[in-house]
Amino acid sequence: MRFLSHFSMAVALAAVGTLAVTALPQEAQAAKKKKEKDSGVQISKEVRPKVAAIQAAMATETPATAKPLVEALLAETLAPDDRFIAGQLAIQLGGKLTDTGLQERGIIASLDSGRTGPEQLPAFNFFAGNFAYGAERWADAAQRFQAAYDLGYRENNIEPLLAESYFKRNMFPEGLAKWDEILNNANASQTKAPESWYRLARDRALASGNKGLYSTWAAKWASAYPSGDSWGDAIAASRWTSQSDSVQNLEVLRFMKATDALKTTRDYKEFAEEAQRKNLFGEVVAVLEEGKKKGIVSSTSPLIAELLEPAKREASSDKASLPSQPSGVRGSGSSSVMMNFADVWLGYKDYGKAVAFYEAGLSKPGADVNRGYVGIGTAHAFAGDLAAAKQAFAKVSGTRAPLATMWQTWIAQQAAPATPVATPAAAEPTS
Image 1 (cartoon, rainbow, N blue to C red):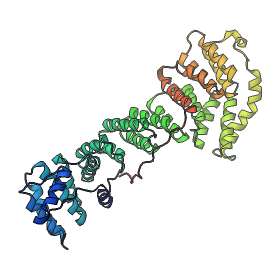
Image 2 (image 1 turned 180 degrees about the vertical axis):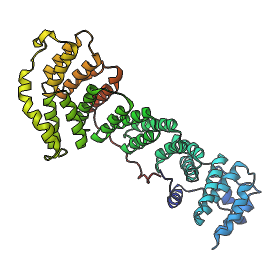
Image 3 (image 1 turned 45 degrees about the vertical axis):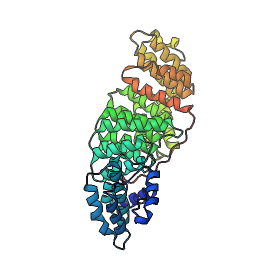
Image 4 (image 1 turned 30 degrees about the vertical axis):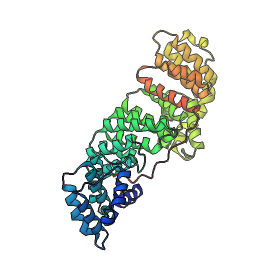
C-alpha cells in the first residue's frame, strides 16, 4: 500500500486548512489581538516580530526567502502557542513552495504544541503518519495512524496503511490483529467492511508463511464474502494445514461442490477419480455432468471416455443391487460397511437413504463417529434441510472439525440478510 502522493498530500492539506496567522502592522494590533483571543492562541511579544518578518517574506514574489526564517523559528525553544504558530506558518509556506519536508515539520510542531484544534487533530495525525510512512519510519507511522484512527479519521486508506505499518516490520501477528480490530469496527457500523480488506489480510497471512494464520484469514474472507473463489481459498488453506485420508478428501470435495468452489478441470478430475476409486458411480456421473454443464469439463476431455461413460454403464445395475435399508445388509454389516453404503446412496442423490445408513453405521461398535456425522450433515445439506445439517456438523470433532466449521459457516450464510458494503477510497497499488 503506497502512502499518499506528494500532490495528493498538498491537496488534502489545503482542504484541512490552517489557522490564519497574520502579523499586522502597528495600527491593526487591536484587531489581531482579538483574533488571537477568539482562537485561544496568543503569540508572545518576543515571537511576534519574527512572525511579521516571515509573513512579509511570504507575501513577496520570492516566498522562498521566508524558509530560513521559518526554520530558524522552528529550531527555537518555544512556548506552546508560539510553537503552534510556527508550525502553522511552516505548513502554509510548505504549501506555497510545494515543500513537503517543511509541511511535515510544521505538522509535527503543531501537534507537539498541544494547541491543534480538535477539528484538525485527526487529519494532522494522519498526515504526520503518512510522511513517516513515506520515509519508511514504520513505527512512527503506526503511532500517528493509530492516533488518527482513534480520533475517527477514516479517509485516504488509513486502515490498510495502519495495518501495513506493521507488516513492513515483519510483525505479521500484530498486523493481522490490527486488521481484526479494523474489520470488527467497520462491521459494527452501519456498513460492512469491503472485501478488498479481507483479501489484503489474507494475502499478508499467506506471506507470513504461517499455515495457521493463512487458514484463519482465508476462512474469514469466505465467511464475510462467500463465493467460489473465497471458499476455494479457504478449503485450500484447510487442506494445507491438515492431513486427511482419501475418505476425508472426498468429503472436502463435496463441500467444494456445494460452495461452487470446483473451478477447474483439475478439480473435477480429482473429484471424479476419488469417487471412482470407491466405486461411487453415481457421484462420478453427477460431478462430471455438472462440469460439462458449466463448460469446465470439455465434451472432448479424456475424462468423458475414461470416467464418465464407464460410470454411466455401471450405475444402473449398481443402484439396483443396493440394499434399500440397513436391515437388508447381509450379516447386519459393520460400521464401515454401513457408511460405505451411505456414501453410495449419497452419490445417487437419495439423501434419506444415505442418512439412514450413516445412522446405522453410528450405532455399530467401533464406529467412526466424526465420519458419520459429516456424512449425515452433508446429506441433509444437499437435501436442503439446513437445520438438521447444522445439528449434525455441530457434533463433529477431531481432524474433521475444520470442515464441519466451514459447513456451519456456509449454512449460516444461506439465511443471512445482505449488509451494505463500505466503499473505501481507491487504493493505490501495493509495493
